[in-house]
Length: 363
Image (cartoon, rainbow, N blue to C red; front, side, top):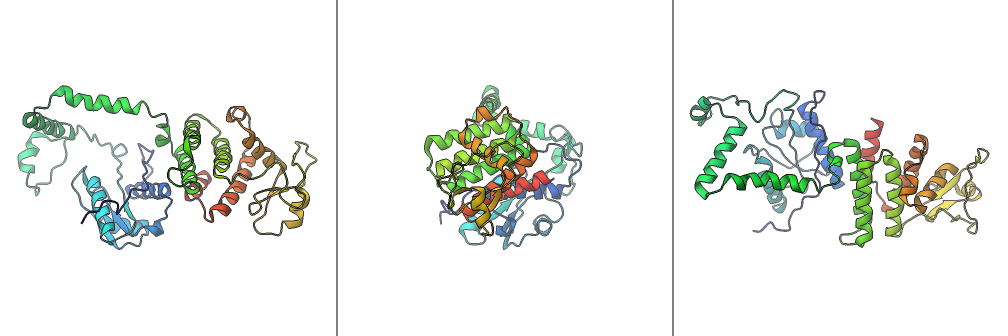
């Protein structure tokens, strides 16, 4: 039976921490699990299959399933060293194809720097019960020299040259330098914003929709998330642009209520205290009079003059005009809450990576 088309990789996460003296190994497994699930737009309640290898603490999947509070139908602890996780992917696809599970979670984590492990050059402790140890341990095997032995065998058997092997490193470095968004993998906060950006796109657009304009917006936004300090400004500007491309951009310049001829011009005057409103059902902002008349409606939320003015500026653009301005944290907090409400209403569900981001910022 072929498993082609029966299973797909829908989420991945690389932990940004390279030295974690304050985190346990189980905690690192949990954090990469949550990151991968957020990337996929799933929750741990969706997982019914779990895969790990010898790096997982305790009794492998039994201990980790309990630690992660998962309810699973299938587990796999195949351990073949560094290749275990490639085999796990294959085993997960097979398990899904056979109906053993629907959502498979694979985790890998370690603390080599925190534990002072010289993973490439330190001799590995030998277990005398392992059959090959008596032949290899007298020669102090390490990762570096054992890989060198594999390379020598390949050169002997297939005629591979040192230059050909060296080109593997050259090619990897060459390709890496073309990735302008590499920082998003190293910074947890920036990476969380990036996951929110990508998930929002996936929620509003089907595959192959959007065209070049959508691709350019995503590319620019990921670049700004690498470069800018005000990440909330990037997120709010992106939301307005994305919603415009999807046909859901809120009407912010004219009241969508009974006074639909009123142009909304919130002033910077401190005397303007009456709140405006946002009605996602009608698709936009309400003048103070209309908001007062329908603020009891559950879908309608208050909108301060400052936030309305800020969101209008995001719609006007371009981003280069906004990037040098200073915006108060309280303004960003309200703008995020209002847009979260608007997006959730139209998607009829929350954005999981957005919830993860808010939890991260609460800290």
